[in-house]
Length: 301
Ligand code: HEC
Ligand code: HEC
Image 1 (cartoon, rainbow, N blue to C red):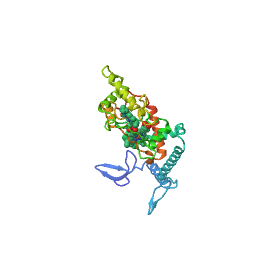
Image 2: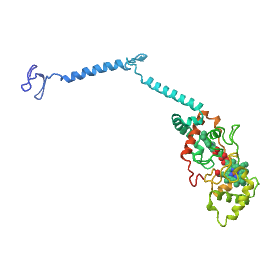
Image 3: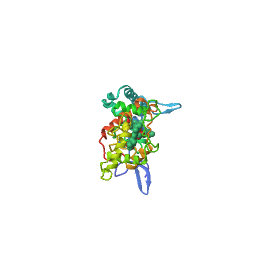
Image 4: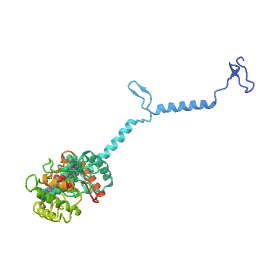
């Protein structure tokens, strides 16, 4: 078993290593291994030359192709920002109807509007805009101050009983607490108002009281709520004949409203948001209203 011995079965020489009678053949390295080594080496070399690779002192070799992921990201962010700035300028300049008729701008309105509404309005009006006690359902209920797009934009900008010098101002007077009416009269009025939205409240027993309440309403309430009690936009007084209640629609709630009065505060958003943001929120809200406009029995109460 010296070096140079030939294996009789395969014809290969042996290496001279032997373990327990098993001898190692001296076979050549298979050709595919060279193939892999060469292709791998060529690829690695080409890659380090083309792509950012070797670090040196203060930097790194940038590669012949000039590929730079950081720059690529920065570029696409810059492009997106420029595109947004462009959209924002258009939202800023164009009037509501123009924006409404532009599908691209309305896509921005829907995306941004949802976020802006969530950040600024949902705390009081609820995430779905359907209101909470003391805060109206602005997705469905008739608007106190009118529902023309430009009017809603104005309401949101100046607020209601807000801090803007042009704020909309309204107040439901405290008829009971201030002694304008007796408790008994307030109670008759509550019965009448309740019967407006809820015909089931009219029974043989309550008919007479409801008629008395109606007379009291005609003398004390129509100036703001209108002869038909359907509300007047000029005074920001709500419709009392539908199923939407800001302050609750139970007889007790209504009694409380008439006895103690109410004055909701809607912030003046003109001081807190940009005109473009207010446009976006208003248009977003108008879209919500289009989708959810059917009155639902029982509404917010
Ligand atoms: C601090 C609570 C509060 C926040 C926050 C708030 N609102 Fe209001 N909002 C009110 C109240 C209260 C009223 C009803 C006032 C009343 O009863 O007279 C109201 C009424 C409204 C109305 C109805 C106007 C009408 O004519 O009927 C709209 C529209 C409205 N809010 C939009 C918004 C938008 C948009 C935002 C967010 C930018 C917002 N609100 C944020 C409290 C709030
Ligand atoms: C000076 C105008 C004014 C007069 C007069 C007035 N109201 Fe009101 N009323 C309002 C306003 C404004 C509101 C909305 C208050 C708010 O939400 O901030 C309101 C709200 C109400 C509500 C609550 C509606 C809801 O959605 O919760 C009831 C009920 C009501 N009024 C009944 C009456 C009755 C009954 C009288 C007569 C005794 C009367 N009002 C007289 C202005 C008036």
